[in-house]
Image 1 (spheres, rainbow, N blue to C red):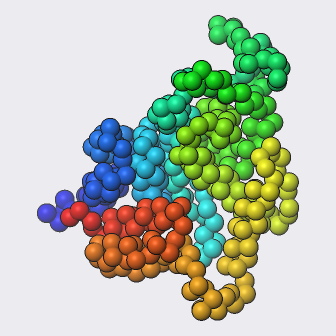
Image 2 (image 1 turned 120 degrees about the horizontal axis):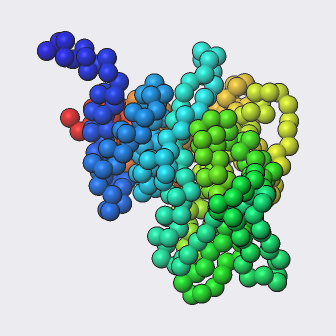
Image 3 (image 1 turned 180 degrees about the vertical axis):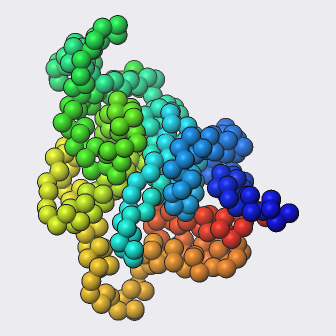
Length: 340
């Protein structure tokens, strides 16, 4: 009996499978009705076992990424989305920790757009240097795109997205060149590994689709998903600048004010964490932060305590922070043995 227990402890895949089984109730709440929990768990385990680094990554961030995939209604199968590892600085040890981030892929994004019910068709393509591509704004309803699928198409030069609504209206295309796409890649946490290296074309299509989706009807869910990505991009850029001790300008066609505001907010938060005495306790208590709420969840010693604390904290947080706290609480319940 003791030997079997030691063997289970020695096998991280077995322990992870047990943890996912304990998360069944939480995953069922997050997943849409058409995706069975056992199917989602099987796909997740296959994805993790195909990338052993995920077994050695921070377990809490892994569980959080899995729950976010479930909330998006997408499978972490490498097609609809992927579990991506990135390094984050550990301020206490001075080293780097492997964290896991959920990254929807273009197939998953298109799936959610088609599920909106108002889109008749949507096309997203990478354009290569030997392809024929022309578009005259104000004159052409749609671009002329004629690739020779069976010849050498040359290097990628850009990407575009276009959609037709069920009403017959054509939404004008979004077009990005390689320089614009690479500018987005540079501020990605996983710019030198993972999807950007293994599936550059897929990430290029997703990048142009991110911009295009904002002009589609009933795209609230998609915009919220991309808003998370934009926040992560801004945070990555701000932290990279701070670590290098220099200010670098990021070339992007996104509204400068929005990105600057995100970076300013993140840099201010980082400055508050790194030095100074910080706000007085009574000032800090005026508005509950996500970090404070997570710390209170971490102090809970039972699953019931977590549920009670979560219910009391959610009204004091924004909707986005509330979603993150819900994920964090689910991970904490898993650590405490929820479902046993």
